[in-house]
Image (cartoon, rainbow, N blue to C red):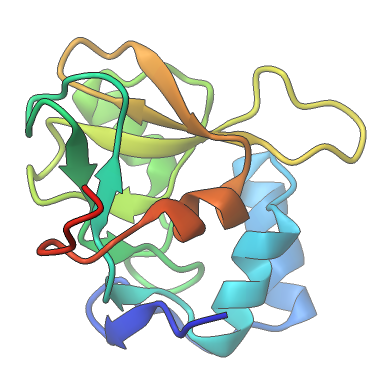
Length: 161
């Protein structure tokens, strides 16, 4: 796998271990996808090298894509599990996102759109799908799981988009 991170940033959390994972899952009420945890064990969040996600639908960004800025890690003041205005639950409440899972990315729009893990159809050992929420707050599936989502991302100047 190509290293997805360009650098650490305010969304980079502390080193990940089993205790932090268990605490985060308990706080959020969801089991985190193994593909997400594999990435976090190497680097717990940060700015991404590849940020553009092609879509088959128009977004507030463009006719054929949206962009993410940073993957949000776990733990720390700005992890997906944090309290105090920066965690996933806080973002769902503040921005009126549907309560379907976990907000995973910092977006260039500052909250007007989001990328989330969608747990609505998740049962057993299945991993949640990844959805994009635009200003209309309608979840649109962009990948069957987190690993597929990372594989979709391209650099902003990439001609594949």
